[in-house]
Image (cartoon, rainbow over all chains, first blue to last red; front, top):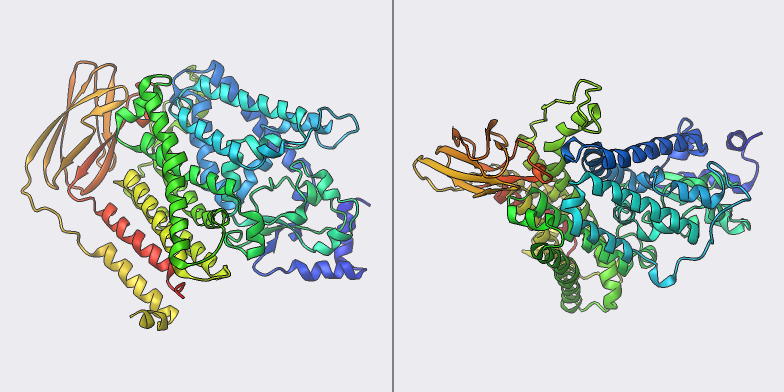
Length: 479
Length: 152
């Protein structure tokens, strides 16, 4: 009898007290455990569906590199530019993250070869494994390097987003780095500490309506082998999960748990934000606060460069190495490293002073940064609407002629059809920014209510910070 | 006043917020009542910028854009207006239309002109940008809606 059959049998006839308890606890408030839905269960339990999707994304990744290196140098006629920076980047921000959290990480092709080498097999682990299996240095833990990576993207964005060759080399670089780190360090060091997209998806996964959690911690405590931890490529122990920022939803823990004690829950949006104080103390960190601020600064910079009417700014961002580019880079770094963090720290400090709440400033900054997450996510979505929608016609074109070699495989290579979204696009962007701001205010409200000293004045300066950011985005996108 | 706000039931609170939202959305925003006039702009297009990039006109103005490509072929189409023209290097292309829609509209290059072509953008400002003002007011309201009830 295989594991799946065994579990179905157990569900039907719970034999032991522990199993009965599982069934009782599965009915978590405001949660739907997808793993308990009969047609979804085998899709999660088996490695094959995920492997097939990963194979497709890996094939797409390799083709993207090929197209970038050997296809047309005209970005709008090259699969690499259009599929990475228009199609995938849009799908990530409009669907994968807001609806599935880190769901993209579960099918991302970049860490695959490294992981296969690490585990000595493709679907299953084997005895013969490769790599030094070193622990990641303690001082490099957290999302600091991911923040730095995102700033690097911002510094070179005007070229990377428009030059197919460079896009290909960036992908090759990420791929190579992921493989090398897999061979040197244990588990997914690249995904956890380096990948800027991992940082981006991880931090906003806290707002998403998906979580992987242990059902009954007592069962885990009694389980001496900890097969979930042993099998997790990310090195996470599911019992310790306090939010969805770190878990890559690979489902290996769920597959290896002998007690069927892992749930993949659909949950209300933003459940991780301003959760109970104990969870918050364990999950909110200073590095994540910095990452949240870098995301806000990057959204502002991207909106100004790519959707604004300032030709000089675009030229400066494009002319890498020139004095104007250095000036642009300096401006970007000052915005992200000085102005936004400085303003945020000041607002938190003012809130503390004004309300008389006695919490260590570092702790307060880490906690209050959760307010920035809904607003940041919706700012990115609003930017994507203005950035990608007018360029969707390129997708049809490159599907038919992915390398820009004059092919017309599907008859759409010369398509000039473009959805005229101008009528509602601006209104939609305003609505998205408003939803983000409203949600951030609700998180601020929850934070105040759940704190030991619930004084509203503590939140007011931070909310003003959010309002100013929203107005700036509003002006950049629809002004 | 503060006690009055606190004593309101959620239905009343949301009712007031909905009413304020409707007021912000539908109350007319005063603009300048200038007579429609003819306005001509000479725009120089070069990789990857229009100069000038921001055109301000009044509603009802008859606008003529003279587009002159300085380096390679450039185009110009205005979001929401369904107008388009193309200019060969050194040749001026003209586009005349009545600015009958109020607000802020992006115009974009329509001919692939280099790496940053998809982001070669300008802005046509027709009268007041009501959406921006209403958006700013609604942002304030969204903040109030989010925090209403938190005061202690």
